[in-house]
Image (cartoon, rainbow, N blue to C red; front, side, top):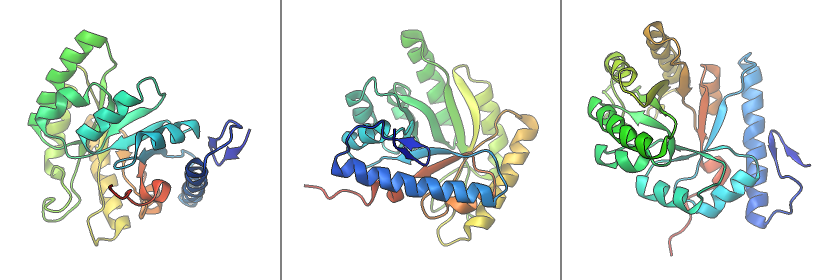
Length: 250
């Protein structure tokens, strides 16, 4: 069995695209291992491969290589892919900005929603989960509060203000069907990612004072995963360094 730094081919022949993905996965895995060691950590962050804009066939290839978690940021695309790949053993994570009226659709496939930034969305997800659990008995939805690390209250990349994290956390905790998992953030454009993720680590520590189990930190992408690992991320969201650029349309 061929091992690719934690991912496996299972001995099956790979097509050209699958071989490309395998090589990129191995390279990213090496970066994660090196950064984890450099940070003095023994707990390797979980990799979420961001598959937005890429076809369902790529998700199948990734699953065959051992990937267990994929991320999407548009409900229409994610719903279609998850339906096409029904039965594939991957967890779908919704990581994009989410309109409340899409909650009913998202809870049909998502293991987690990582972009919760307002009370109205918490309410919509709770109502959608109540219906979905009655119908299918699905497990609770992991919920990450997206917090802005921008000094200008998130004008660029979205998220709740740090001061609002506590009330959002309380709302999630009070909602049947929802589990408070932790925080998600994106380093501000043009900012030092180490400073941004150090700030995020502080917000996480504050959250855990009242919600000790909410220890998840979803942070770090292709360009800044080393900085995120240094400051305690538990989940990395890596897209372009594994899948490449967005496919051409047409």
